[in-house]
Amino acid sequence: MTRDEIFNFFHANYHDYNKMKGLLENIIKDHQQEIEELNKKINGKSSKEIEVQEVRKKELEVKKQDEVKEIVSLFDVKRQSIQANFVRQEYRNMDGEYLLRKHLVETNRTPKMFLDAVQWLFSNNPKAAFHREYIMNIGTLIKHFNTIEHQAMYSEESVQYSEEAQVWVNVYKKKGFSDEEILQKLREGGYLQ
Picture 1 (cartoon, one colour):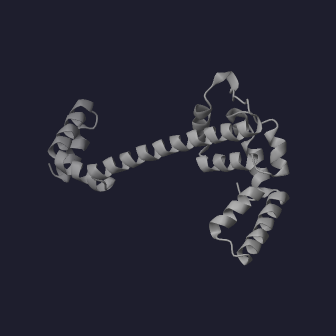
Picture 2 (spheres, helix red, strand yellow; picture 1 turned 90 degrees about the vertical axis):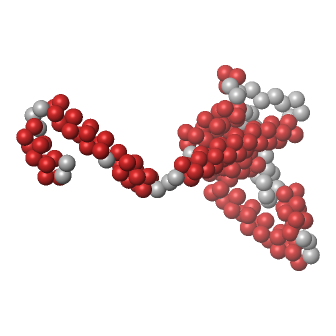
Picture 3 (cartoon, one colour; picture 1 turned 180 degrees about the vertical axis):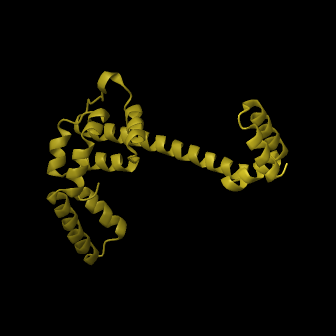
């Protein structure tokens, strides 16, 4: 059918639902191949490209889960270095990894943000020592993350520490230390997490 024939048929039969439905089904059947080709062009992706994207998504998800495990175990190790008999207990005995994964999905925060928060929490910063007193599990870390992030990144002391760390970098460079030795010295001094 040409466009004009379809237009005329529509105007003659627009009140009859079944005739119109039959017409449209016939048109779709006649042009099924063209419709599929247009859909492929619109989507612009072959099945191979879609498959590769799915594999990448799965790999990223596995990497994210590994990072979450690393964060939780780092929290436990750092806490145990302060309290030898420490055993983390979450609210209602929930899994810390589950809580963190759920929070990351809900807030679109990254695992690196929490890794940095844990490292700052157990650094030599006086404000970190205050927060360390009451953050005993992952649930509490999540609850107070905004405060920790603000203290770690925007407080005057954190700016002072980074300036002081820069001074030490210059001193160590003049003494002839290698980059790895400088990083180690800064970590020992609590300037880097």
